[in-house]
Length: 232
Ligand SMILES: C[S@@+](CC[C@H](N)C(=O)[O-])C[C@H]1O[C@@H](n2cnc3c(N)ncnc32)[C@H](O)[C@@H]1O
Image (cartoon, rainbow, N blue to C red; front, side, top):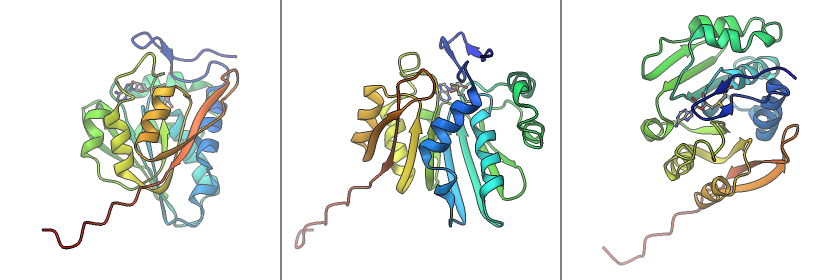
């Protein structure tokens, strides 16, 4: 057990106090069937709500580099309303400096200035990080992408209900490829219903550590009704 950074504003932690990295791998990688999910795909697109310290991104990047075939590309898009600066990220992830040797420092070196808007961060070896410093509900409607997997982080819905909005779920459906997966640490009813209403098949599975459950699933687009013949 070690400390985890906490947001006083949201009265919630950035990641598990038990083991944030193990939690990230359980919830977001396994929850999205990664690394199997990107096998055979030239490019794989992940979108995340709440970049925070970048721990989820680092876990995904390392997993990708260790498992992807030569030439495969990863595009990781992450929204962050209250970005930390590079020094805060280094301090918060210090515990994993060895684990992320060759990842953490390059990420922090390439990390953009804390200016609102879209930032393109090229990390080499076919890995692109797009950081969007804005409220996800403001910025996601402006995004054009074809997403394979969603990392729904962000503080818990009871502390941060504004983030888990209908706009978010509608835009997830708009940007999802058929069969796109999502994973989130929460099993809150409002989140599960919101996703289901937009065409996601939602399943409750075992959570990380002391958390009893979390949610995973995939997008199943409903076919658009054929226009009636003979009418203008
Ligand atoms: C639990 S932390 C995320 C942890 C992060 N994934 C990591 O690996 O460190 C939640 C993050 O969501 C961000 N956030 C909260 N509400 C948001 C919103 N409406 N739009 C964008 N980001 C938001 C917070 O600032 C915080 O960094």
